[in-house]
Each structure stands twice: as C-alpha cells, then as structure tokens.
Image 1 (cartoon, rainbow, N blue to C red):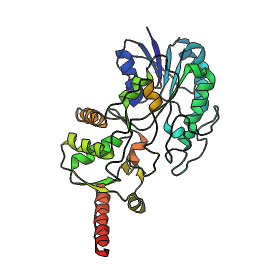
Image 2 (tube, rainbow, N blue to C red):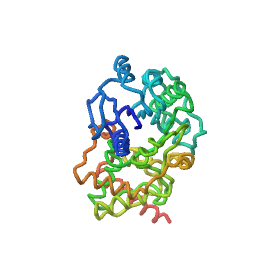
Image 3 (cartoon, rainbow, N blue to C red):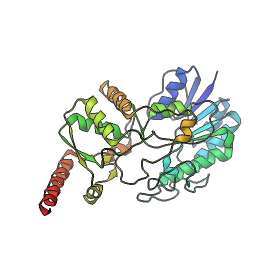
Length: 345
C-alpha cells in the first residue's frame, strides 16, 4: 500500500489531496499543528510544528513514506530542515510552489524555462522585496523552498508544482465567492476589461489529482488551458446564482487604473498585465494534467457554499472586493465619461 505524508492537509488544497489519496486506498498521514482547519476523514494526523526539530524527528521516525506532499512551505530554511530530516525516510517529495517564483510574473508570458527569482535554500522569512507589480517576498520565499527540496532530494526524486490561481470548494481567499455573491445581488455589475480575455484559474481538484501522479518528477506549471474567458466566469456566476445581473464591460482598463481601482483585489482576478494569464502548462498536460472548465468549478463552488460550506478565515480575504457603493460610483463616472466622449464627437 502506498504511504503518503501530507505536510498541511487541513486547508483548501491539502485537504483535497488528503481526500483523494484516501479515496485511492492509500495510507495517508498529515502533519500539522492542529490550530485551524479540519482533518480529512480516514487520515492519521501527527501533531507538530515544522520549526521544531524534535517534532520533525518524531515525524521521520513514523515513516518510511513513498511520497511526501508539501502544501505549507513558505520559509526556505524551515523547508530545508524538513527536507533534510525526511530525506532518509521518503522516496519522493512533491512541493507545491507558485508561478510567483518567476522573475517575469505577471509582466510577461512564462514557461518552465523562464527565469526564477534568486533565493538561497537557507533564507529566512521576508527574504527579497516587494515590487509593483513585480517580485514579492512570497515569490522569493517559494523559490528558496524549491531550491531547498531540489538540493536535498535531487532532481529524480523531486516534483515542483507551480500553480497560478486555484479556485474551487474550500477556497479561503474568496475570489470566486466574491463574484458569486456579487452576481447573487444582481443589478448592473462593473465587469473589468474585455469579455473575451482568456483566463487560467485552475480547479483545486485538478491540482490535487496531478500532485498524486505516480513517479512524477520535474517542474510543472499548473494553469488552465486558457479556453475560458472573463465573460465565461462572470456568466457562470450569474447563471448558477440565478441573479439578474447585467454586465457593464469597462474595456478601457487604464480608466479603471486611473480611478485607483486595485488590481487583483478590489476586482478579483482582474489584472492588466499581459503575463498574468499567459503561463504555459503544456509540460504538465503532456504528463497527464487535465483541467475542467471554469463553469464546472463555479457550479461546484456555489453548491458547496449553498450547502453550508464555510471557508477558513484568512487575513487575505479582508482586502478582497469592492464595495457596492464604490462600484456604483465608478459606473456613474464611466457613464458620464462616455457621454462626454460622445459629445466631443
């Protein structure tokens, strides 16, 4: 029987990975502090802190593991200690990283050969700097975590997964939930950018499935194919909430920027930079990565929410979304700008 250790396992992606591994008949153990979240049914949980060397030794002694899936690495030196402790007791290590490790994200189109931010494997928290819209300490940290695992386990025993935006049931940031609630309210909705803009959010269940792929090694971007658009997303949110929303597409994105609208947060998933939704995932697809449509993700997320699903509270959720009053003010200003434009002609 396959024995898998999940570092994390109680939140969004980690919980989904645990559920899928249990469903496959694997012996699943999670390692977490136990302060937040819930354990998936059928798992064995070892309580501990990844910064505590005694806890890590106790974890390694509970092995051996055929597979380690790490969904909770952010500080390189902590990941380095974890990897070194588990290396004798684990066959493979899968690290969930992020597209934010790329030096060019979100400015330029990317693939796995694109330049990665430079960060040592033993770096502490807050290494690097935050740019706008460029690099972030989050991206630097994840790049250092990648190096820590790769240097310890070697290329043949390491899988690095770099997802973009992950959506679906249990999402704790609340990007999709915000749009669903806004469509449920109805009325005239500020829709940012072009309706036909290709987007690449990926479903949490598809990422989890790929993370458990047998004998996987290498680096993989995990993004949707790009066949879905912003209009597909918003229309699905309206359809499944059965609201009466109408869309006002503000295609002059620089007008929105000029009004001080914060990209990515005030209007979730909206970003003007050409690289935000241009991350190549063909390498992963060649290895079996498959993605469902945004419509399926929206439908299942709404079903989860309306059946009593509640996401874990997270600090990032507080900065998300634009108020209804501000949205309506912006729409009124947009209408006035269009009238002025028509009058000038």
